[in-house]
Image 1 (spheres, rainbow, N blue to C red):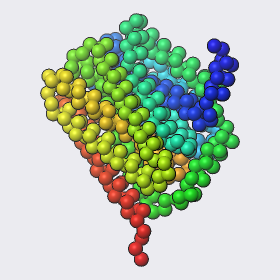
Image 2: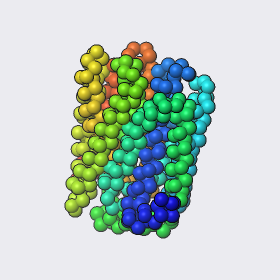
Image 3: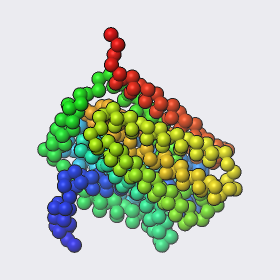
Image 4: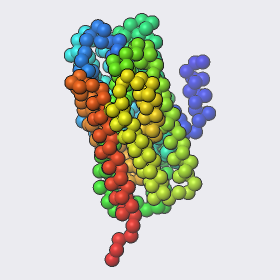
Length: 424
């Protein structure tokens, strides 16, 4: 199949919305591969470059701190220069390929840390602009759910591919093979991603017409937006640490082999991806039948309460049960992944209802807030494991999840008040 035939096949078989969904999904897939590749290969890498759990956490924190700094600016660029969205996405994926090349030549912790700077810059170019695209289209919840599945599938696939590449060759060659995947995908996105100022204006006009029909939300918008950022910031440590540290927890705490740890991580993250897809479909089906904005937001926030409430309990259980009960811990971990990832794609759709204008900037702020806590969390998680044990690390995540639950309840009450008529 030559490249022209592939181009025609995609062009004629998908409508515009699904084309954008496909290519942003592939971008999300690659973004998550880059984000979790270090974690997937740490159990192989540390045989040549010994690392403490704290140093492992730092390698996860450095790129996230750069995301905090850059995400809002990237979102603003996407709003101001609509045609830049396509280029921001593919350039970021090319950057992920360069990061993998640098990792393959690293000899010390310092070399690894410097490479993760390139990783952080590259990761920052995706979420603010891609999510702005997806939230300006008709099937908002479906698109966000499917896009999150692409991302979570990247997280789930990475441990398996990393194990396969590392076992057949070595961890350095594995990084180079991943670099090839990223570089090729980045070039394909550059060539085929449908993006133009006219396309952007068409999507925005569709969204703006829907907003005008209902009228914009005018009360407590700033407070509600701030609460969404707080909720996202409180969810981020759990999301980041589950995705980043699961392979290491299984290898170091349960003494599974490296291959077994990789397979179990892939299964857990795969379950998370399935849960995200399921909730996206349920939300899209539930709100597509003429539901008002109030019903849409209420259903989404109740979904968040379910997701976070169950996850909070299970994280606290993980902190307390003995790790000698291996199968019980694994069972809890599997159920935790399912319920926590149910809420993975919901917050951006709520943000688009609350702050419909300048979506790139809104998502940039959302991800900056989430990324700040997500950046700090792996270092804290690793430090607590070094000083105490992984049970203490999970207790830390359970308390953060409990705080998130409080923020969700405050948001629900604040939104309820914002739609009630003011008393004279």
